[in-house]
Length: 378
Length: 124
Image 1 (cartoon, one colour):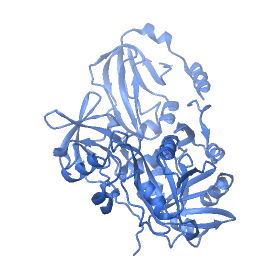
Image 2 (cartoon, rainbow over the protein chains, first blue to last red):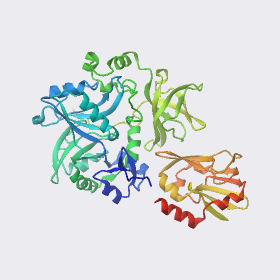
Image 3 (cartoon, rainbow over the protein chains, first blue to last red):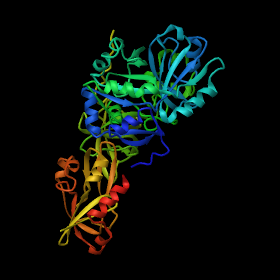
Image 4 (cartoon, chains in turn cyan, brown):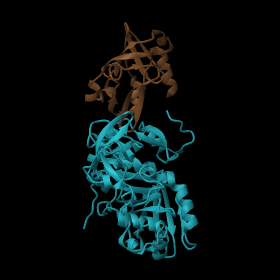
């Protein structure tokens, strides 16, 4: 058993133990990598029904300024995304950039639905990065915009095609939300911020509430017939199948958003106006193509390639490296993602992966590997 | 036939001068769903502690070490077809390899079933 004496506990720690979770230290928290059902079963259940994940290790914080324009502009100075026109109750994926345009973290920015909260943006950042993110923001924000971390909030994700059915029995507002929008509601007396988002490629929700209420909220959802508990292992294989980046693996401070194939997070106005850290490098990457780019890899055969495996061309020359790799339960084959030189970035391009002493045959693949099923209503 | 266990969670069952080697039920329960097993070449000779095979679960790759010196005489090709056998029958059908025992004296340094049970209890 891993030594978890130094790890922090999330508000759902006792529940994880009760449900037989195999706990590991993840981002400094004792979190379940899997439950007795196993990663394969948990993964497939999420794709078919609905799964509940504890993501309370992630950092939740508020940016508060005098008005939306001021707060949005302050954040735009640190990221390549556009926030000034973000609608009430809408959310956006973005990245926090260092001076070289490298990615400090990827995160979700939400503009509250309540007009009374004008000037506030809600942030959800990676657990392992939160302290660094907060220090960076505090150092860079103008004086009239302040950062307020919310360390006493829990975050529960419920993901999968039936997540909406399960949640709709507790919140009449859930079904009306579209992908990347949020609302607030009271569920069994618990105040909950409900966001229709997630990181599995499935439809689903993330629910933020006070830590004292988290276990009760989780149990309410787990009592729904569609919902089973799932761990970080399934979350990782789900996001990999969905072609989504994992910070610290597919993204780091040396990687810019053009290389990471996250150019969709850089809205048109920002490309035209610039004004973000590392602008020269990123805009050059967008117009001329970056010197390396993130691709999907579909592996022929059954042996998986893991992070760090070298990517070779068919003549054996090194062309890149795998940043995430594993077995895809939905596809019953190994998949990976990694960075290659642009000449090898087209789908269908044949490559080899060096795994231990063997060379595995692989092919550059379009991502997502499994179609995303977000709910985008007109 | 005698069965021995290593601290790396391999079992080794010896009959005459042939040893059958696999991973323990405890080891498979720690690994989770096994999706691939990489086996050595027949004829390979190994020393105690050498990497003999690799087990890949959904999440990670784990090495299997040779518990004693020997030469590989047979590998379990059935595991290539159905690696999940490692989860369902780790100490039976899902053996990994057989080897000709190189140094029977090394078996004395391994654990018997009771000692291994106590060793696992300590790990919990």
